Structure formats: C-alpha cells, structure tokens
Amino acid sequence: MLSHKAKYALKALLYLAEQEENHISRTIEIADGANIPKKFLEQILLDLKRGRFVSSKQGKFGGYYLIRSKNDITLAEIHRLFDGAIALLPCASLNFYEPCSDCKTEEECSLRHGLMIIRDETLKAMQGITIASLVKK
Image 1: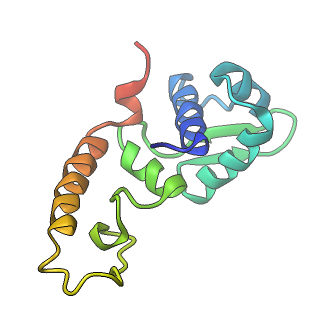
Image 2 (image 1 turned 90 degrees about the vertical axis):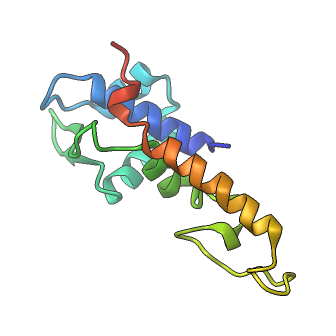
C-alpha cells in the first residue's frame, strides 16, 4: 500500500508533468492544483529534490520544476524513495535485503520464494508505469 506521502509525491509529479515545458510552479500552485495539503507538500518536494526528480528556483518567480523526463520517472522509483522496499519481507527484497532470523535456510524457505515471485511481478508492473503514462491527456 502506498503511503500518503508517496501518493502526494506522485500527484505533485503529475501536476508538474502536466505543465508546459520550463514552467516553474509555486508550492501553493502545486498544492491547489494537485489537491495536496501544503504542510505536507513542502517536505515532499524537498525529498523529490534530494532524489533528483525536481529542482527549484528561488525568488519572486521561483518554484519547482521537473529535472528528469516524465517518460523516465517510474512508480517503482517513487515508491522506493518514500516507502522503501517493494518486497513484502526484507528477505525477498532486492535493495533492502535482510535475512530472516526465524528461517533455517533461505533456500528451504518456500514463503521467501513465493514472495520473490510477487516482488518480481510487482516490480515489473511498477517499472512499466511512468509519470508520462499517468498524465491526463
């Protein structure tokens, strides 16, 4: 399940992706346009900036804009930035792997193998969905 933070990040990215190229959007504009509470949006935009999805310009005409193509930003990347692992258990994770303390061996754990299949299919689907593919036409 996506956290509110990840959902709002996706909505903010969608809003920015719908703007004309080189348009700089003020935070209040994004909050109103994407229906995101402003108090959450500022932190989310900072996280997106640290993740190198957006950048900002200071000053009277400042705001935020995409620095990566909307065709290249995937649901998987945003999920990992805000919610961490895509796998349901750490032992089945690609990027956040941790062994389980209650398994004899990973090779014998049928639960892990089943969850790895779910992880792979979920990851494949999430990597196939870009911000561009979600933008309203």
